[in-house]
Length: 246
Ligand code: ADP
Ligand code: MG
Image (cartoon, rainbow, N blue to C red; front, side, top):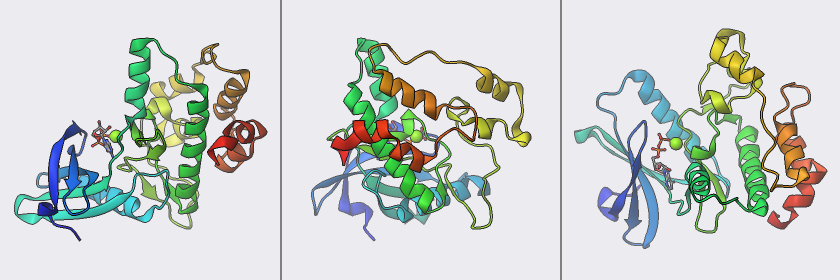
């Protein structure tokens, strides 16, 4: 357990639904971390549970492609929790995509294959620990200083019980949900149907047919044909184009 005084706050990074993230420096080791400052004083029991779940999930997962959890500090006097985690110097993928759009630049195809591989490896670890992230999207995929992927923000994640094969609660961001989640009988509404029936364009012609093929494969609406992580990682095209990551 570390103390608040072990860290020096460098600057704020941004605010999320739970609190604000700061870049901090661990004084003794001179290492940088992120701490998320969360005031739990006005939180409903449900929100507090979600928070505890994020901390528990993060601390359980061990992968080079998942944001590492370091410590937590509670200051009950001001009902504040500090979650200390790995600092991802490259920021998040959503910001990178936004920047590319603004400057009319394409991400390198090699980088995209790397993200596909590393994110799949992160998910493989989650799934083998029966942990569902439930909100995978570019804003929750972080990059380290070498542009390696770190899956983060497990705020909506949950640990699946041994005796259930599905998580039935609808959480996440509709745009990134799988058809099986959207077509859940409990969640049918016009918005959900809209996302299931909508079609999509080919990825820019700048990118190879191989990458396009994998994207189409992953977006299969049919649950029987849509690949799971193992199938995806073993797909010959994925193996061929990500061999440099191994
Ligand atoms: P939200 O609830 O909106 O997902 P977060 O509290 O997770 O927001 O994050 C707030 C901001 O801090 C975001 O801009 C996010 O990109 C950034 N951030 C979160 N975690 C890290 C991290 N480990 N390294 C670098 N930046 C991070
Ligand atoms: Mg987030």
